[in-house]
Image (cartoon, rainbow, N blue to C red; front, side):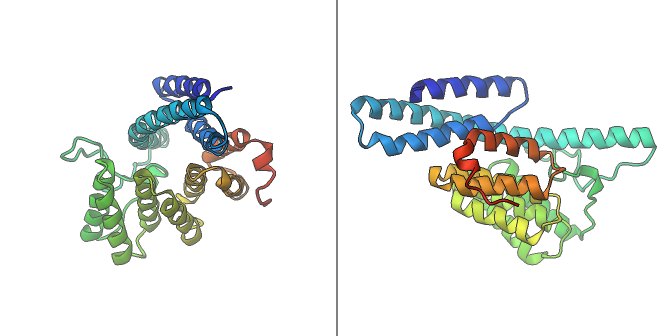
Length: 264
């Protein structure tokens, strides 16, 4: 399939997934991976292949912008869904739902605040008022897309409150800010840091998956490293909701890449 046909096919799949509110990033990553492969062959091809590659790359960039906008909305939706599930469980058992500071509040920007998606109400924030404010300020910067402030605030939070119950969350969201900036090498390192420092934290599995995504963004030569990240997620965190998507990523990478990853 030509580059332009591949781009359009994946674009249609991506838009359909977005409209159904069930966004899968794997197909988009595969398209970008294939475009990077085409770059290597375009140097020796004619003008037709270079034009085809340029068209495909333009569509990838357009999809990337849509994806960035969707990712923020998906994170908010995940939090709301997790909170709703927690409230439903509490209603059945008759136990109260613990909320992190700001959960359900709407800050000035109009976006629901609260704990990051994940364990939701089960992770009550027990820090001092100063610690709570520092964390919420950093998350507020993330929500409005102020990536430089997001990175600075989460870095300062980790330096000031290294033993915080939300240190793993802060490290994860700081890595996410690097990813959203397009600094994928920094994102790879920061997501790896989350797994290394907080292997039992509720963000470890997510961090491994996002590390694999960031590696794919760096190009085909990082396919083996991405495979290793996805396989490690499946092996070490078999109960994570990310496992199904990690398997999908391995399928898209294909046996030539999946066979090069580290076992166990």
